[in-house]
Length: 360
Ligand code: PMP
Image (cartoon, protein in one colour):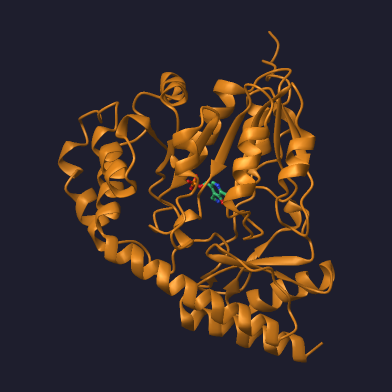
């Protein structure tokens, strides 16, 4: 008997590296490495989940109707064009499985989210990187990276880990300029942090080649609950629904996400605090001579003089109990991605970096 052989491409997948939550020798550090909500989540979520505990023996519904309707109501979208998944990661996987495959290519940007090449290879397709301009996605470069083999383009707007964004006109130009039959996935994981931004919903509503993905992990503070969703043309949603696990979301996930959507006050507060504290952190970094690009998300990508300084700053912050994200794996070894915490958290980061800078 011989060992089973995985599909081609799977051994080339680089394992996903998540933000660290520990630092050697430091007890109870503050985790600012995974773009989590520093205010936790709405208290209504725990109540809604607790109410489901009596029905653990029951299968959840397969159509996620309650959640799809709550999403549709909150975002003013038709519920039958919404699909829910185990985090938006699952929707990204479903899109790749359904539309990319052996012989196909999947394009994403230079510092794009690291799950894109994973889902591409898992589907048997070849990931292709399009260059950015000064850490900002470039529609022309993405279009140049496409050819008749391109099946999907993934674009996070705002992007992780850069925090940068491209304008609506550029996204429209991209959607309309893609090769025939190529799907554009607009990843709006951080869309709620941008005042008045629909995450690409209006484009997904009017094009037959655009799917928008969203998550409950960021502004709703539910990274641990694992709920995400997608919105797009009926044909695409129908295709993805055929291949998703029929019981992918539990009753608790569904109830928790619905409760989070209903607590508009919590979401508004999270958005406002994020904007205020992000401005405070950005100003403080500038004053310390640490540049960063304008961020539209709940983190800032701080640039240091080089990889050595970024590593030293990471360790200095870690020893002070502040864990941020190293992004060498994203080709940004001179940068650290810092999640926007509370005002107190941001001030603690700035104080530690001031000490770091003055000691150098
Ligand atoms: N897209 C982007 C750009 C992200 O940063 C993340 C989370 N790191 C995700 C998608 C996936 O989030 P989740 O699976 O928790 O919904």
